[in-house]
Image 1 (cartoon, rainbow, N blue to C red):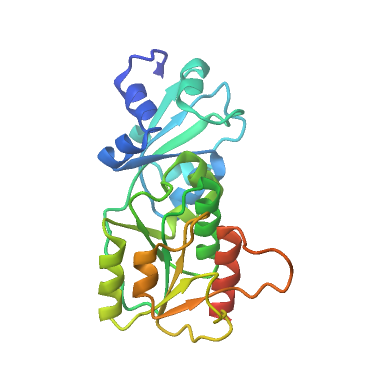
Image 2 (cartoon, one colour; image 1 turned 30 degrees about the horizontal axis):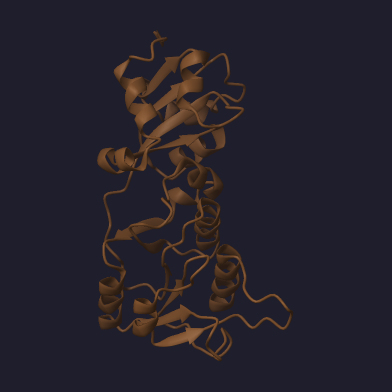
Amino acid sequence: MVITSKENELVKHIRKLRDKKYRDEAGEFIVEGTKMIEEAVRENAKIKMIVVCEELNQNPLRKEILYKIAKEKIIYVNDKIFKVLTDVTTPQGILAVIEKSKDNEIDFSKDLFLVLDNIQDPGNMGTILRTADSVLLTQIIVPKGNADCYNPKVVRSTMGAIFRVKVIEVEDLAKTIKEMKKHKIQILATDLATDETIYDVSYKKSAIVIGNEGNGVSKEVLELADKKIKIPMPGKTESLNAAVATGIILYHAIR
């Protein structure tokens, strides 16, 4: 059966998942494209359904991936309906609805943590998630109000990292940092005003705090930091993109 009506309840549900508030309520998000869906299958993400438009789908899932997906998880729509569901200019004709992880607890046993304090740009958020995945970080801590990690643009830019890095959303970042300090985790906040650089500190059992693109780390969090650090920049540039800065610091930390 091929769904052809915008009034279909599944179609309405998927369309509403474009909205963050509805994503939070439903506990679901959308991924698009063959590669991302195959990543979801490989990483054992909880796939609620896969939507296929055969007229648009030029890159069908490999047979071994299809075998892992129950038949009842696949629904078919015509191209008119798929174009209503997608936010991609040139869609591949396949998307999936994924259940968000319900695990929102911090694993304090880890040695290195990444905290994002009010990152707003979806492109930065996606790049930071990919970078965290590349250094084998398995969790990042973000306060509610950051760019949504499950925004379709962010999800696409993570290139699959969204399935491997646990996003821990917290209501009160200052309270969470105080809890981390109780677990003997050193808080390293980035701050252009400090004289201490990323080369001057130890990263053993540490949390690196990256601040907002325009305003940096919030005053409340800076006051809780054990140390403030910056990337030394001998050139005339005064600051770096948040995602670039995160990559430099994380790779130095694991070195």
